[in-house]
Length: 319
Image 1 (tube, rainbow, N blue to C red):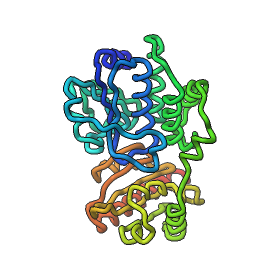
Image 2 (cartoon, one colour; image 1 turned 90 degrees about the vertical axis):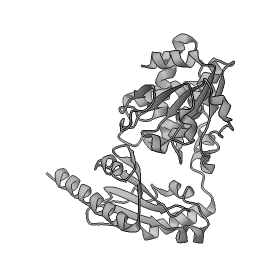
Image 3 (tube, one colour; image 1 turned 135 degrees about the vertical axis):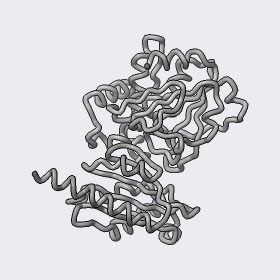
Image 4 (cartoon, rainbow, N blue to C red; image 1 turned 30 degrees about the horizontal axis):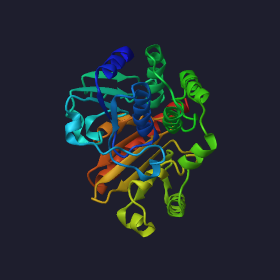
């Protein structure tokens, strides 16, 4: 599969790389890291990255402004996105050929060529694997690509603390470290937060609820976020604010968008939550997913279903 992808990259002069909306470090790391790999190897190719900007992650990469005509005869690659509903920039269908590269469960097999590896910690890890095969064709790994792919792996493994961290993860990370990465500069930028976000984090820590089954629940309405002067996008930085609380099994953030829609951010330390996310226009990993609620009444249903998942998990763990 990797060889087929390398063949396609070699074949096209224009490559446009997409990823999911509301990006995290792995989305941008895999997208921009792959772009850097291709550009460093084939400096004559035109390589673009597109999608909505996330201000907290512009230190990793900023998106390109790409006109519609660039898609004519182009290769489109979509990274780190399980379903088409979440692809940022709807022009992903306008190219000549499309490749999906992802580590989420293959809920929606879109594209002409699909490479999905759910055993990988991150899509960035998969791009390093692609590089290792690509070395046989002269692929170059420079510091900028290494920095981006390292960011993606660090982000999706929680600094190598999550159970998706495998021996392969450390192996591929070692390949990146051999190139040289400024760790202090990287981590300072990744975990930097301004005073406003710090104050909202204090609010979250004071107001989250913890049920008897170990389910954490936090709701951020537009009223609350306007009070602190933050956007719904910025609130994504707080999803793990209380993740180390004793007794926590799973947790959910309900965040009201500026347009009134309710984002559902799901995290877990054991119960698999991705199937539940799929029932509510979402998806993701077994332990980290996203969804959407149609109303505040529906959030109550989601809480009840999460509580039931936690109960089953606790009963199995106690046997």
